[in-house]
Length: 381
Image (cartoon, rainbow, N blue to C red; front, side, top):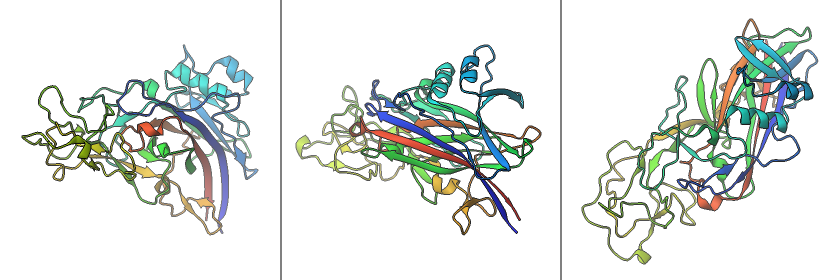
């Protein structure tokens, strides 16, 4: 006989406003969430079984400069505890982290607070061991960027999860699942650029929450770009007139020996980056400049990619009643509670991928929300 105890830890709602998403410009940024008086990030735990509880916490190890003050802990009824060498601020299962708590945590952590700026990744294969490296977005003429992204351009939230039972004891060997992941956008498709990197004690993986595909995906991290916004792919206009190849590819770009020539007004738009929506010019969809020496071996070299999981490959299987369950799942759990403390850990890095084709100037000014839902599924035979 199979019994299924399912706990929902709740919903994270991040109301985001874009404000100049043009990759490569110093002023380009994406607002992560709009300030308001209501809770922006919340964990409203709802127990579906009277015999289990789920608590979520944030690791706050800086004892001299805590990210969540004692006054805030007292005000919102949080608890500060020590487990596994970490100091953790826990919510109660029926309460959540409100806007003020998350805002205070991010400010004191030196993380992004109200603005999330596009950053870029280098090539990354699906791996259970590889860390994430985030780099700043390139500027005009910077074909290779090795500078790390400013931590204020993205968000890192180190979560802790704890499962209890009717005796208030910590339950070990329980998987925490991400069973809800959606990105809703008011206009355009900037939601496609949101990425989450999840790191726990057993594995590390990158995911695209806007995709519910049942297979993994990838993002090209190289190609021709129009960073100066003149409608043509960038080239060295002052010296060699060689067209620029930004990022990484499998071969070595080779430029033509003579300029492209012809009439610029008659030059066609060239979709060298395999952009899906080709209705209008953008950062990734432009013309070859007639004065440039174009890269003439683009068909022989290919951009390298950053591979990612999708929500469809991360969430667990469903039973005949539509409930998530562990048995036979192909999904990837966020973390697992372990002894002796019964606490599981997972760091979430939330960022906007500048290499994604949706990070273009026409996406500026639109809002999107990111919703995540955590659940526990305890299945016994």
